[in-house]
Length: 63
Image (cartoon, rainbow, N blue to C red; front, side, top):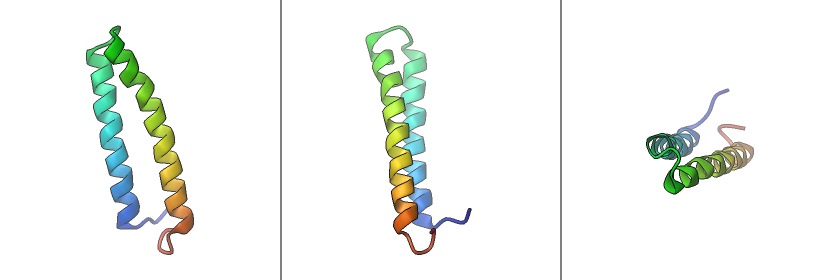
């Protein structure tokens, strides 16, 4: 799948957030902060999927 630079920029931003929150959840496992971070990761993944699919539908270079 060929994508544009904007798609890659959007994806890398979300992946950076997912990595940060996932690491935070692992470090603080069992605490309230860790549980919140783990839950937030699932929300961020959903938002990333929506943002990337929306971009792919509208971008003349990607879609």
